[in-house]
Every structure is written in C-alpha cells, then in structure tokens.
Length: 254
Image (cartoon, rainbow, N blue to C red):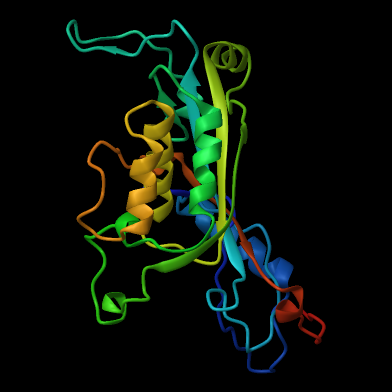
C-alpha cells in the first residue's frame, strides 16, 4: 500500500554456504544496512535471527498490529478557507506525510471509541475492502473477506516534532493513536475503518451507517460520505509470532 509506513516488518530468506555453517546474524544485519544506506533507501534492518526451515514469516504470523495517527485541531484553529484559498493552519514539517491532520469541528473521540467496538470479532468486511486490487479466484471466494479483529484501542498520542515545534504542535492539536490488531487484513481495510470512525466523530455519519456497512456486506454498500483515511497516517507496528516457531538450536558461527 503505497505511502504506508512500517515500524516493524518481517521477511525470511534461505542463505546457503558451502560448508553448511549458518551466517553470523550480526554480519548479515551490518552488511544489509550498509548496502541500504549506500543506496539511499529509507529501510533499516533492526535484527536478524536464525529460524527453522519450517518458519514462514507470513503464514506463521499470529497477528499484526497497525497504528493510525491523527491530529485534531483544537477549538478555534482553522484550516482551508475555500473562498479565499488561504490555508491558515500550522502543519509541522516533521509530521509531513507522517500524520493525518484534521481541521474539523466537532470531534467526539468518545463516540469514536464506542463505535470501534462494532468492528471487534469476526465479520465479513466486504464493504471495507478496496475493489481495485481484489482479483483472482481465491479473492472471489465468499469467505475471502471474512476477517477477525481482536482489539481496537484509541488513546492520546503525541507529536513527533522536536524543539519549539513540539510545544507549538501540541498547543494547537490533540493527537490520537488508533491501534488495530488482528490476524490479517484486506487491502485498505484499516484505512476504511479509520475513515468510518473519523466520519462518525465529526458528525458526517451516524452509528447506524457503520452497523449497516458491517451487517450488509457489499461493495455497493460503502457510504460515500466516508473518506478513506490517507495512507501516510498508517504504520505497521508489529507482527506477532509464537516464540516456539522461531527457535533454532544450532549456534551461529562466522
């Protein structure tokens, strides 16, 4: 999903040496990071581990946690004056393409929290899937859009700004972190869920609209008053595994 960030992602590779001895994990981490740095890529390897041949980074995942960051302008802070084409709001440069800024009033976070409970559990999220990428026989299966959400938490966040910008940003905005945990998600599912909750919190839709989109799953049932939350506010925070699936008995030799 172009524009989405990853604080923690995983991949697995098969590396072979003539002597059969595994590569040193610290050496692999260092070589990869030097190469990524030289190529000017904004990717860093945090850790390399030896895992059994049976491990698969995708199929062994127990779940994934996503974070969506929003910043809501406090009372009296304006956004875009459509008549005069004048943008009055302060947007910190450190947060560009890192957080979704809202200049909408009112904003009822308690209403958002209450409505988020509707998404918990197992549902057919057909209404919340993106239609452009859903191709192939497996994706046409009636159970393909069934997913389970284990947890949604909405809690106060904080600015990623530094120096005087940090105080200015937090004086002007209330930051909120929306964390969503589940085993797997459809393409753009989290962004559509967040968009629905924002639409509710800003009085564009009612709770009934979310309930109907969940209980009457259909690509035609998406409420057009809901704007899909932009990609740049979304972060993959953690991929969860069973520690037993990661255990590798042999020692690493250089």
